[in-house]
Picture (tube, rainbow, N blue to C red):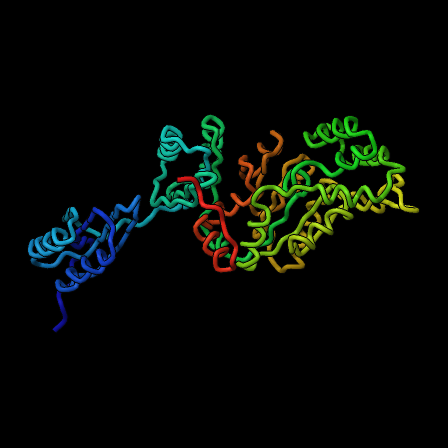
Length: 410
């Protein structure tokens, strides 16, 4: 004899059990021990802990004598010194709608009014926030929202304007397997991987820094052709002792979090490349120092120990950066959709467009407007929050390797 089956379209009765109170070891196991005695089926679970306060939600099938189970759960909650609510309904937890995205919100600080505005725009787009996770609380606050019900591109457009109004960084990415796979990260160097511009540092040794800096700024805004502007700046360096390159390298300051980002993502199998409109005499050494797999940049011509004011070979310009990205992706064996490009200047635009995810990092307005997303906090390792990696996970991995992370302020 086969058991009776519910009629087509019938929604089974369910119980939503919500437990709240002070977190302690054994809370979850005690509740499930009570549930196990009723033979119910577990349909969904969510649990979070905020400042040692636990919120546990369990959706289970409703037994025939559901009131007895409710009483048993209440007794267990009383023994734990917690509050419980049992809500009877029908049906399983609803399926999440299509158009699933990860919306990463970064603020310094992240104000409640800003979160209200972001949540409001998500609702206006007809989307739902299914889950919220904290990625970091120091030195920035980063929150990851799991959102469904809206096209990621449309949602990105809506939230970009809100991000500008609220002074936040907001990244919207489709929720797919790419976020979990091994990827290639291609970085610009000047004002991205490092602070400042190498050519201006060389120009300071040559006594022409103001002239070079003015041209560099205009080129990064996209107001000048990159190749011609680079050649004109390099000509001003003619006669400079090549030893100045060593002095400049010694003075380079990495972007905060650069080593942490490379170190952490290399542990996960990521590959790195730097592509620069700067100079290989600097970038090749940076790559060796940081453990970066690929490097491409312009080569300064040096004759008899002095710069000639010329560049050897073709210039790595805007198109050259995108070409290098594709070549490195082929060498690694990944599709360009698995490439993350990070840059700040107009000569990075083609590279950012070619990548699966283009990130404008403390970038010029023309770059922020064109990129998939932007990060405007001065911490390069904030990029990892966009990949679903939390600050706690980063610090735990460093601790295992004997790397001590300064404690955040209380």
